[in-house]
Image (cartoon, rainbow, N blue to C red; front, top):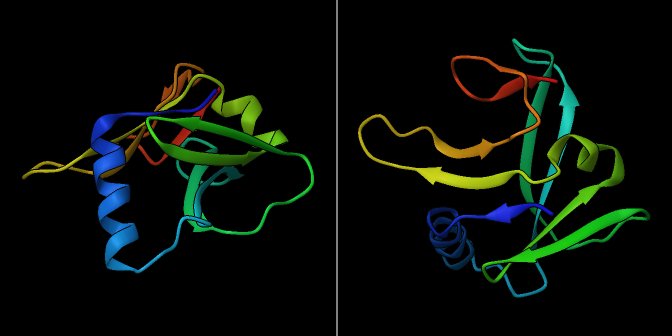
Length: 108
């Protein structure tokens, strides 16, 4: 399961409204090679399903990931941190053994 914190839900709803994205759009999260720690998160809105997609819904937000990425993202919570020191969307990933200072890449 990929979880969505209330802070992330509010920001996703705000972006969805600003960008005029319909209910057919969902959050696609994936993990790619790269970044300071070896693996990086990617997140975007999408409205096209792919074979082997893993689909979750938490806190009223539909989150989709490919099977390979799900192995890294299992039990991860998507959060949003605003304010003066805010980083934007943050992945609270219990599978990450190490993360970089910016929080955008990790290693297992």
